[in-house]
Amino acid sequence: MVGVILILLGLLIGGFLFVLMTDGRYFGKQLMYWVYDRIGPAAFGSRSEASDWQGLFAALKLQGDEQVLDVGTAVGDLPLTLTAQPNFQGHATGIDWSPRMMETAYLEAQKRGLTARIDFRVVDVRQPLPFNDNTFDVIFCFGLIETLPNPQALLQEFSRIAQPNGMLVLSLYKGWSSWSAALDLKWYQSHLAQLGRPAPEIQTLPFRNSQAVVVARFGKV
Ligand SMILES: C[S@@+](CC[C@H](N)C(=O)[O-])C[C@H]1O[C@@H](n2cnc3c(N)ncnc32)[C@H](O)[C@@H]1O
Image (tube, rainbow, N blue to C red):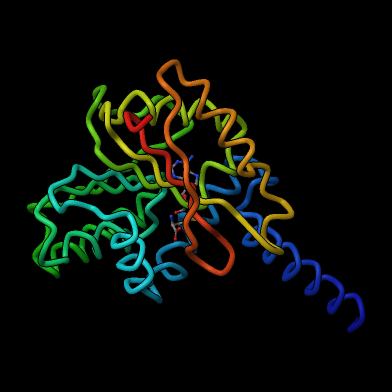
C-alpha cells in the first residue's frame, strides 16, 4: 500500500515538474492555462529578476522613450522594472492569458505608483493580438512562443504591430532546457526572413542560464 502511494506521489511530482520544465507545451491548452493561472501568481510573484532585466535593457541600448510590449509577462516583472527606471519615460504594456497574474501585476503597479506608464491586459496570444499595426518599438517575449502550436502566426503578429524600425527580443533556450524547445536560432533566422518585410538584422545576447535572447531589429539592413 505504502509502495503504491509512493509511486503515485512520484508520478504526480514528476508530472508537475515536467509541465513546469516544458512550459506546459505538451499538455494542451486547457491544462496549461489552468496551471499558469492557479500557480503563476505565487510562482512568479515570489521573486524578481530586476537586475537581469536591467542588464538586458542596457545591452539593448533602449533610448528611454519607447512603446514596449511584454508578451507572456506573468506578474509583470519586466514592465514593472522598466517603467521604474528613472531614465525610462516611455510606456509599457504587459499581456498574459492569466487573469490572476494580470491582477497581481496591476496591484503591484498601483503600489509602486506606475499605473500612468504601464498597462496590463488579459490576452490569449493564440488569437490575433488586440493592437493596431505599427504600435510598438520593442516587443519582448520569453518562454511563450516555443509553447505554441503555430509560433509563426505569433511572429507574424509581432511583425504587424511592431514599428517599421521596431525590435523583437525573443527567448532562445539553451543547454539542458533546450531539449524540448522546438525553436532554435535557425528557426528564428528562417522565419524572421519570411514576414513579408525586409529581413531584420539578427543578433543573440546572453541572458539567463537557460535562455539567451534573439534580437531582431527591423529597418537596420
Ligand atoms: C514560462 S512563463 C514566462 C514568464 C516571463 N515571460 C518570464 O520569462 O519570466 C510563460 C508565460 O506565458 C503565459 N502564456 C502561456 N500561454 C499563453 C497564451 N496563449 N496567451 C497569453 N499568455 C500565455 C503564461 O501564463 C506565463 O505567464
